[in-house]
Image (tube, rainbow, N blue to C red):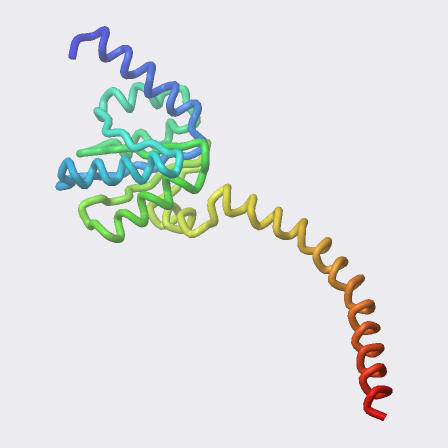
Length: 172
């Protein structure tokens, strides 16, 4: 890789770090091509990305970004997961690491907040942005559904009472 290519990689990584809502740093030693493709596919499905980085270039790209404290984690075979959704990269990395011990979550960050491996696991246990949106919509719709049920209940009860009275009159 010549100097121009390296500068382009550093600039691209710098944009990535500036745009991402969360970054998870992992070691991927021992993962084969099929496992890496599987992991990348899962990331894409969730709207996240997984990228193997050259440590020196990544450290240069981190300079001047909110993720600068991550610099110390870039030792050995490092790959980063990043996304606009804070939970997605953490959730996928942690779930994949449970199934495959070759992927090791080192830590990560949300903006300027540095996360260790256990904090990333805690973050992974949170619901995703889409799940939270669904819960909010459900909460907003619930009162309307309850009001409709309450309004319909008296009419239904009245109809049952009249029906029971009509049946008792016919029987008599």
